Image 1 (cartoon, rainbow, N blue to C red):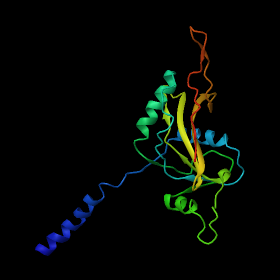
Image 2 (cartoon, one colour):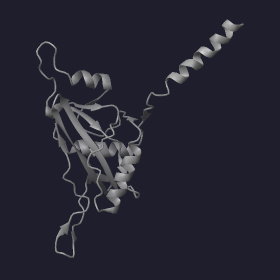
Image 3 (cartoon, helix red, strand yellow):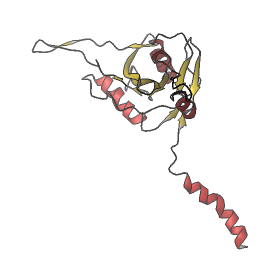
Image 4 (tube, helix red, strand yellow):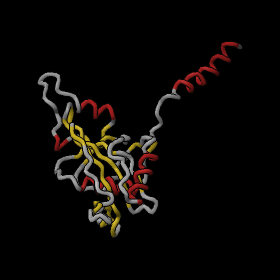
Length: 195
């Protein structure tokens, strides 16, 4: 009888061991893929795109922008990026693309063991996306994308897009004339990174 009871409790012991494992949920929001597709459309590439299959919670460029809708999208970005999301083959782009697991991406970001040459260049690196933050009225989004090509090769930046005529385009806020004569561009960002 004790042997039988130990067999019953064995699966319960393993359940508790996975509590530290991060739960990555599928990212199945069609509007998110419309945003990602618009961002990729800003890139000039004819070759197959390599895209990491899991979102990355970047923490760059999150300062308030003095634009309520953009700030709301940044706040939503901070909330949605507390979790990581698994991407699927839902991009609406003309170029062929491949989603890479973390293991596949890591292998491509290492130099060749025989020659020491890096397999990727800045134009054909691995695209990593954050989850997408939406403004309260869903008309503005904030998303960050990083392109990594191994070692100290890569770049990234945020994208603020607005929906116009059912398409996501770069956000172009109206300038504001301040009382002192200076001009403020709400939502404008010069943030980005290179490594």
